Image 1 (cartoon, rainbow, N blue to C red):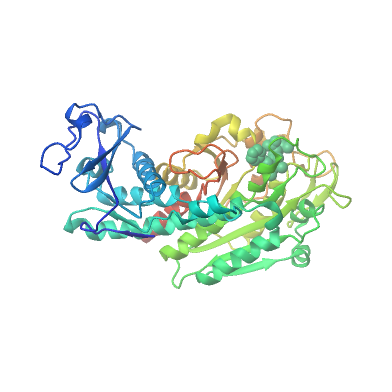
Image 2: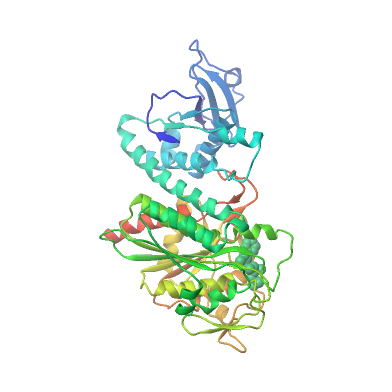
Amino acid sequence: MKITAENAAACDVYVQFCFEGQPVSVPGEDGKIADAAIAKKEFEGKEGTQLLIRSAQGKRLLLGMGKEKEFGIDSLRVGAAKAACFARETNAKSMRFKYSKTAVLAAKGVRAYAQALTEGTLLSLYKFDKYKTGEEAQKQKEKKMSAVCIECSPSEKGEVWKAIAYACAVSEAANFARDVGNEAGNDAHPMEIAKKVSKMAKENGIKCRVLGKKECEREGMGLYLAVNAGSAHEPAFVVLEYSPKGAKGTVCLVGKGVTFDSGGISLKPSRDMEKMKHDKCGAAAVYGAVLAAAKLKLQLRIIGITPLVENLPSGSATKPGDIVKAMNGKTVEILNTDAEGRLILADALLYAQKYKPSAVVDLATLTGAVAVALGPHAAGVLGNNAGLIAKVKEAGENTHERVWELPLWKEYFEVTKGEFADIKNIGDGDAGTIVAAAFLGSFVDEKTPWAHIDIAATGYSYKPKGYNMQVGATGFGVRLLAHMLSAWKKSKKK
Ligand code: BES
Ligand code: ZN
Ligand code: ZN
C-alpha cells in the first residue's frame, strides 16, 4: 500500500476529523450544507462517534474526536484505524485524510500528526489470515486498500514525507513481530523461527547467527538448555547484529522466545494454555526493533539476542528440584519449571554483557502477576539505572506503548536465595513480577545499565481495541524501542 502526501489524489473515502463544539462544514454538490444531520447539528463530534455522508467529493467519513483540550495523539491513531477499517470493509481502494488544522496543532506539529495517521492505518489493517481457507476467506483477503494520502500544505510536505517513512518502517516492523508472535506452535519450533528471522535479516542487511544445542553447551548455557530439555526439537539461540559504519555505541536487546509454554513438568491448567504460543512475543519485539533500526538506518550498533525454546514435559524434561548451572557458573535450583522465562533470559543477559553494551533492555511475557498489577494498559518496567528507565518511559509515552515502573529494592532479591544452590527460580509467591525481575537482575553487572520490560499483559490481546483489530500478538515494544533508539542517536550526538 502506498501512503503519500499528495493533496490532489482521488479517493474512495474522504476522512474528516471533527472536534466537539466546533462547527462542521461540508460543502454539498450545490454549495450548501451537504447533510441534514449536520444542518440540524446532530453530529456533535463526540469522541468515538462517526457519520458517513455524501459530499461534493463523494463518500465522506466524519470522525468525532471529542474536545480539543482533551486531545491525545493516540486518538489520531485510533481515528485513522477506524477510517481504514471502514474503507476496507466497504471495498474502497483508497482514502484521503482531510487537512485538520486543529488536529495538527493539537498533535504539536504536522510530523507527529502524519506519523500517527500512518501508524493507525497500517497497524489496524494487519491481518493474520495465512491459515484461513475457503471462498469467504478468499473474499476477505482480496479486500485490500492500495492508496492513502495525507493532505498538507506545500511547506509541510517535507515533514509529512519524513513522518510517513518513519511510520511505515516502524509499523511494518511491528507487523513482522506480530507475524512471529502469532505463528502456531507446531509451525514455529525454535529452528523454524530462526529460519524466518535469518531470511528477514538477510533481506535487510542485518547479520544473523544461530547457535544450536552444541554451541550453547559449549557456551555453558545450562539454564537456557534446561528449559528445552523436554522438547523433541532443537533449541535456537538467535543473535542479530545491526552494525552500521561509524555507529556510536552498542545497545543489546534481549527477548524471551518460548515458542510454546506448557509449564513443563509444573504443567499449566488447560484453560487458555493455547495462548502460550504467544510466549515468544518478547523475542518477536526484538526482531521488529532490529528490523526498524535497519530500515531507519540508525547510527547505533544494535544486538538482538533471543533464546528460543519449547517448554514441554517429557521423560527428558527438567524436573522441580533439578539444579543447573548458568554461563557464569552460578547454580540455580529449579523449583517450578513454569518459571522458565527467567532461566533462558539469565543466560541471554550474560551473553549480552559480553558485548560491553551501553545498555541492555529485555522484553518478556514473563509473569501473570503483571496483569494483576497493571492490566492491559501498561507494561511493567524495572531495572538498575534511572537514566535508562527514563528513556524507556519517555518512549512509552510517545508511542502509547506505556510502561509503569515497579521497585527493585534489595529486599526483593532475598527471597530467591537458594537452599541447595546459589539461587532458586521462584520466590514466596508475593510480588511475582518484581521477584522475577530480581532473579534477572542477579545476572546483570551493576555497572551495566539494564531495564526489563514485562509484556505478559500487553504483548498479546484477545480483545480488538483501537488500532489492534487483529487479536493475538500486538507487536508491543517495537515502536517503543524504535523511538528510544532513534532518540538515543540524537542525545549521543550532543
Ligand atoms: N509465560 C508465563 C507468563 C504469562 C502468564 C504470560 C500469563 C502471559 C499470560 C510464564 O512463563 C509463567 O508461567 N510465569 C509464572 C511464574 C510462576 C510459576 C512463578 C506465572 O506468572 O504464574
Ligand atoms: Zn511459564
Ligand atoms: Zn513463559
